[in-house]
Image (cartoon, rainbow, N blue to C red; front, side):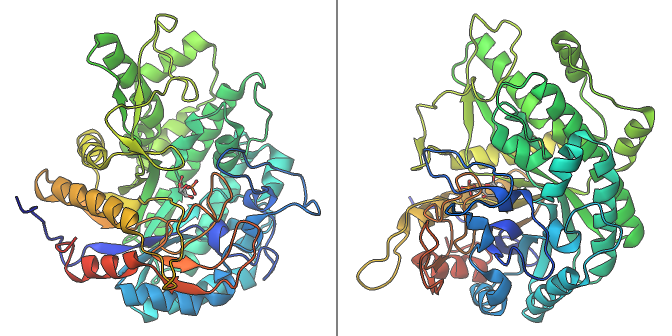
Length: 481
Ligand code: BGP
């Protein structure tokens, strides 16, 4: 049977996605300050990255040089244009604009850098899609203020957003506030807690969960303020949330497993409820009460959240999760580090990420019905070990298969289920540094970058087989997969 394909509308935003700290490099150029990402050493598949206070000789800090986009952006943007990109998602490194985060006046050199990048993109007919905070807050705010547990950060962030939203008016239309804001749900793994909330505490520190809920609340208030402010700056601005979407399935049809999966979904996605619906779901204050968790939420905060709901849901999709109930957990408390199990029906990547294209269609339907907002897939992709063959080229048929299967399910969600989708920007469209491991070896790109985990290599760019594949997908409006 031939596979049925679908066409996406002409104005659909095909593109690619990256984040400043994983690919720009130039960590101390142009007056840039030190961000969280700059104090994280490399790890690998089996060992976690470490945060060091300051830079230690002999350690590798992959985010310092990234893939040197800072100096090579014209060449890279030309390759994106050759693929036919309509848009390109990146972040504005907060520390290029406010090196410490708490200054009043911005750093003009940093602002100029993004002017140059956006102008170069626009010259090629590519619109920038901008994340304001993508795991790269100023490290100074972590040390001096304790990160997002401190309400002062709301003003610092709003000030940063105001400066860039005014500066790039007319160049940028789509914004997102906090990348994968809900990853903080893994609060007992200090790595996402630091990345998302700037909370730098040791595992097992009492009160970590409470800190996470307070930090997330403060971030969501800041986000809602930025949504309102952004609309005052330009009424055409589209300002979105950014959710890490990994649907959580019950392992079996056992009613307790279903209840556990429901609570897991509620726990992982309440952030979306707050950002899209403007209020906390009912179950959460009850849960806080039982756990003895105190989150300070004022009436004014509630009003801000209600008025600052997002225009769209940006989300990443890489994998699905599975959970099950246990007799020891009769109240279905979901702890992400403990409660996930393998799904016997799906395969995994080399990094253990479950590959599940149908889960993308499922998630899109779930979000459409729950949040009633347009959606934007701002990350999706396959991290793999790539090898240059004797012909000097990477033949990444495994990546093409991953994308084929996911794009097809995405198109079904639109064509058959009526999901309202703005665009699709595959992650790491050019090889870059992995966020979770700090490796170069975990590659996502359509474009290969010659660099190894130790930072050796010419940094030369070359096309993988997936480059031509994606080019024809875009050229055919998604019909030729
Ligand atoms: C998301 C992040 C990205 C990115 C991607 C892939 O969680 O938003 O920054 O890196 O996942 O993850 P990794 O780099 O760990 O493979």
